[in-house]
Structures are given as structure tokens and as C-alpha cells.
Length: 201
Image 1 (spheres, rainbow, N blue to C red):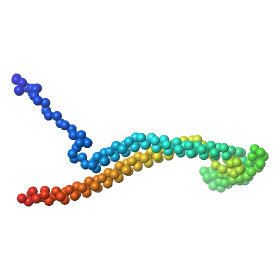
Image 2 (cartoon, one colour):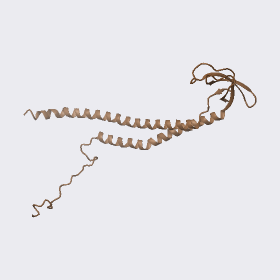
Image 3 (tube, rainbow, N blue to C red):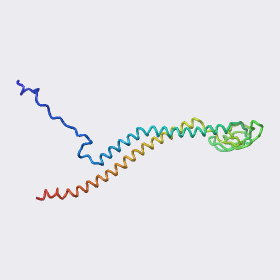
């Protein structure tokens, strides 16, 4: 079999397809270029801004809560108090207010009100937190709360940034699409009479 009949006969290579770069595409409108650059910018905002927003908001919340932790720890202390009356009524899951009495380190006897479980007898001891003025108060905020606040607000900041970026992208895309549709309508109003005239001949 000669070379002409051979399926493996050599010949000129098929023409190569030239890919038109997106930048030099004649059909690419200014709005398309603007939208492309906007998408790149928003992706850059996400890549750089997402960790910065999460870490920044998280550390800010953590530092703020830790200042509260240090202040409350310095101003509050725990003491042992005794109930001055029986606590009755209510379910075991619901704490009831009761009068208690305790003595400070300097011997000053103080009284106050705290929440205890129903059924606690008179004279029972309970641990309570008091401030420097001798007023019953809540337990100080702990470092665990500072970590949880930092993580929560850091996550919320990250989610907010993502929602904001995609909101901007969707909003700009909607505006550009409306302008494109309006431009197409205007161009079709000019072209349609010429196009229809070809079929009337």
C-alpha cells in the first residue's frame, strides 16, 4: 500500500485553533471588564480580609472580656454564709431567694439575699460571692467566657464579611444586568426595523 492509501500518511498538520484572550475579545463590553476586575478585587478582600476580620474581632472581644475578668476577680470574693430561714415551695430546678448571714474577715457580720434550692433548711451553709461593699453579687466572669466570646465574635465577623462581599457582588451584578438589558433593548429598537425589512422584499 502506498503512502497515499495509508491511514498513517503524513500530511500538513491541521490548523491550530487560536484562543482569543479574554482581554482582547472584541465582544467583551466595558461592563464585563469592570465586573471581572470587581470579582478579582472581592476575592482578594476575602483572602486577606477574612482572617484579619476574624482574628481582629476575636482578639478585641477576648481582651475586653479579660479586662472584665481581672476587674471582677479583684473586686469580688467568695464567702461561706448560713441561711437564716427555711426555703420552701417551688420545684427543685427553680432556685428561691433566701436570707443569709456571713462574717467578713474583719469580724463584720453582714446579711443579704441569695438564690438557693427549695427545701434547704435553716442554718445550712452556702457559698456566695460578695463585692468589696459586702453586697451579694454574681460569680466573676472566667477566662473561659473570654475565649468563647472571642471565638463567637470572630466567627460572626468572618460571616459578616463573607455576606457583605457576596452582597456587593450580587448587587453590582444586578445593576450591570439591568444596564445590559436596557442597552440590548435600545440596540434592538434600532436593528429590528432593518432586520424585518429584509423579509418584506
